[in-house]
Length: 114
Image (cartoon, rainbow, N blue to C red):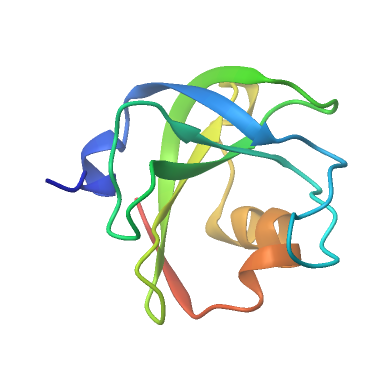
């Protein structure tokens, strides 16, 4: 059974970061401007763990924990992304989230769920 990304809104989430800040995407030329990972033990509609952007570290990390502030729901893809933030970033707006994730999310149509 797949995990509903919206069920994480407002919760503390532990992440494994498999694409740290500054790393290169394995299949294209994208350089990650944020830490990106997944929630262990979950299943998203694409058959992999539920993915997450981690906003809150200005250096590469391999694990992170934070508050799920939002979900980027891709309307032209079946792969929702959690937006997990450090405590000092709880006031981020939708525009802030879009700006931070634009380097990848520009290729998808999406809405932000809060």
